[in-house]
Length: 83
Image 1 (tube, rainbow, N blue to C red):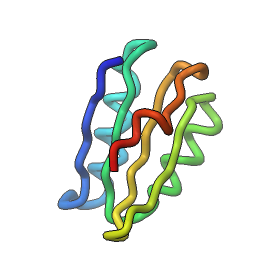
Image 2 (image 1 turned 60 degrees about the horizontal axis):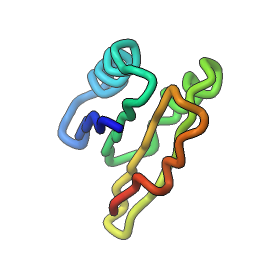
Image 3 (image 1 turned 90 degrees about the vertical axis):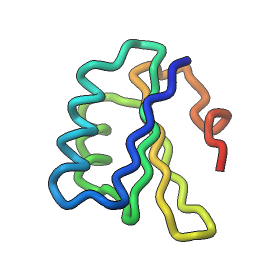
Image 4 (image 1 turned 45 degrees about the vertical axis):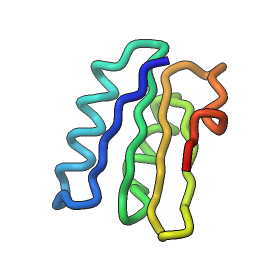
């Protein structure tokens, strides 16, 4: 699987959402997006549910959100989380 990293911690709204959407449109079936953010991207998560994407949200010890997203519903995203 190919990892696409989007570190949006220093980006202003709405750029993180826009970049995530761009990556999701261009992703292949075996790619996954790893988004790193300072807050939980609630609008993005709602859209992922509506569009049928598989995703995992994880809040680490530094209060940083890690969102893993894939088009492939069979992928185990938890196994790809390296935090």
